[in-house]
Amino acid sequence: MKTIKSILYILSVVTLVMVASCKSSKKAVRESDSTLKSHAGFFERLEKDAFQFETLSARLKVNLDLPNNSMGSRVDLKMVKDKAFQLSVQPFLGIEVCRILVSTDSIIVLDRMNKRYVAEDLAALKGQTPVEFNFYNLQALFTNHVFLPGKQAILPKDYRLFSLKQDDGNAEVKVRDALGIIYQFSVDKENKLTETYIQEKTEKYSVRWMYTNFRVVDKQIFPMNMQVQALMEGKRKGGMEINYNKIELDKPVDFDFSIPSKYTRITFNQIVKSLTRSKK
Image (cartoon, rainbow, N blue to C red; front, side, top):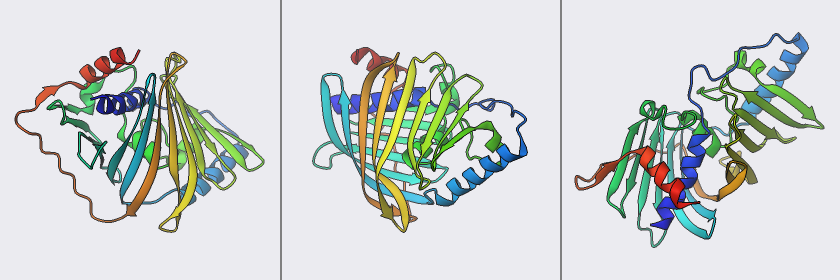
């Protein structure tokens, strides 16, 4: 089904530009005390105003814009912070056609229309994509957080790894990892993250993730609209608009991911290759 293939295509392109390597960040460069103080102040303010949750449930409206193909689908999101999140794709009448579960160490995809599934340890994906996959970085994209590639959180000792430019209250922070991948974050005067841009060294793959329509959710500010652009070799290969609705925080979340015995197992790499061929 085109809906499943299109959603998995966008997610696979996003996956291709994430990093999960223990050697992902560059060695710190000696900086002046004033520079380090400026960095510390900025990140402390950013963390103070960042969206906080332990569990998150939401109903999403996802609109896909691909070459010669546009569509929309309801997607139910369940997330347990720093552990796992689940996406249930329901393009019509609440009927689930695809379910995706991503945890800190694995990814499972159920394709109910074609009765097939993917179940991979993230460690097993090394070497199958140009860069590696990191759960925490993807979680940050969906929840409007600045992140350090390959790490679970940004610690005070990590502040110096970022370059910081501030102009009239707006800020741009940038970090380049050991593989040459650039991560650039734009922050406005109210300490809201408005855009994350990721580009790998050869410039073959890049993702622009933009945040708008900030609203109050449980006394916190959250972007109800996210615009995602996936680019390959400098050309826009697809886009995805995510509209959040019915967000609930810190309520019990259960994941159901039993795999029917009649489903055929395929690999994540097979899905990526088939989608890439079908979306030229």
